[in-house]
Length: 132
Image 1 (tube, helix red, strand yellow):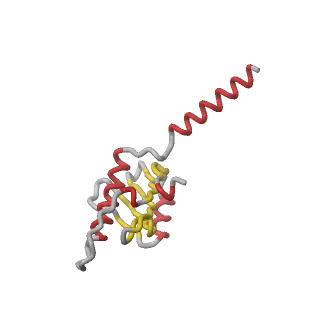
Image 2 (cartoon, helix red, strand yellow):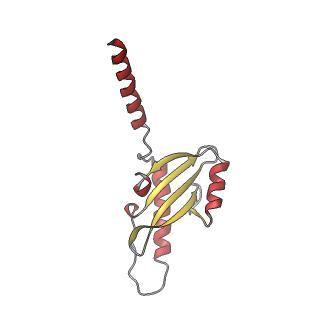
Image 3 (tube, helix red, strand yellow):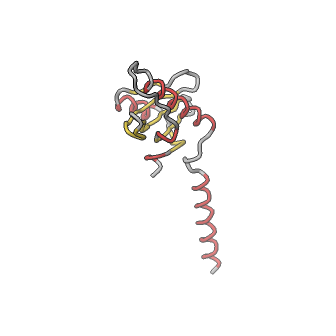
């Protein structure tokens, strides 16, 4: 009986620790990364000179999987971005340094993967399609 109680308490503690380390909670720095990408996409979407209406995308129109390397102080972001008012429509990958004005978009998946392999990246945030 005593062993069962100890086992049950250990399992409960494990569940609490794992849920407390959830990557669905964003830090202030992670929010800055998200804001940079949303701002960049709004600039891109509204850069055409034609008579289309302006786009006003928000974080809810995106999905994010954000990695961070403490040594390089660099965020790698796998994202789904909106296109022509369709949320989560196109896949894009980014490198974001909080010291730089704009995020760098990776043209090739292989470049993103090379960066990820070259550092000690850990997942710090998931949302939307990546949270499932």
